[in-house]
Picture 1 (cartoon, helix red, strand yellow):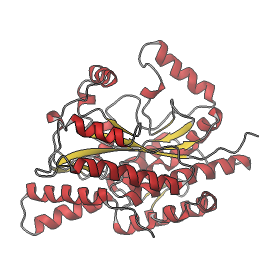
Picture 2 (cartoon, one colour):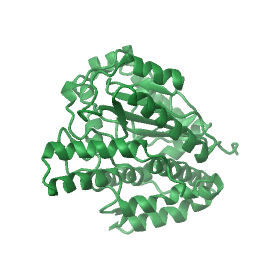
Picture 3 (tube, one colour):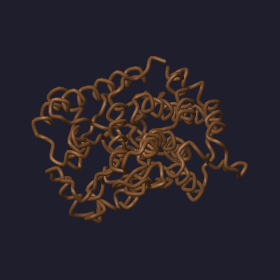
Length: 380
């Protein structure tokens, strides 16, 4: 029997930088601002593919309490420094009205290669995501849990949706981000592998043929990290509210712990065909938490309230042991109040109902995102 995994947590978030005067994206933010962010939090705040983006990453956190402190401090750092330059970060996976054609790429050899290889598929990546790393220091275990964890990806996505608008239009989707990202190769649901060596053989074929340089170019919704001994959940939008982000992270680590516990009991989660999981993935990006997902066992669409009750029954033991039951239970509030996508739409249509123009209503959405991004987590 292998040693119990550490189940450490690492969270990465990408933000968009907006001009507080125009509410549009800052297409070329001052280099000095980025330098100050990097000096304030060395190694934890980095540029992204587009200059209007910035990425933060927590240190390795032993528990969700540490992750809460790290995420709060990193968001606060970007907020405070950006303020000095008339800018503000928004934790949303798309900007309500910015156009990708107007953006500028960050100078970086890796991004140059991406632009050259992917062309317009890369240049239109005016999207942001949230990744959660869970410490699993055994390669075989990472692949085994990845195969089973795939089932739960739509549930996590639904809670996180924050990209209903694209270039000034209500897309009718709650995560338009994924429709953009899915235009890239090696995305969507991961393959199913019988072992880590089988996974590595597939990666080696792509490397030896010159398609990719390394496994960091595998962009599945969940993947064994190529840089860290972790399983990396990547399907979710970036959560506008810190509390929502912590909920998603807590659910991620609790579900992985539950799957490991089943493995230790010589049990495992049933694996379903990707065509079925893909259908729930679509429902999650279309409806968020508002219209349910398919329960494959009974062949019916089940409300998200009932789905979460089932998940809670599965993971409550693990969430208690990991000290994150409170964060897991925050999902109830997301279901009741709405995820970021739903709240953005409420702001937008309330503004239209009050006689504002479409342009001003979209600016109201940006103001909402600025305020919610800087909001401290609750002490619930």
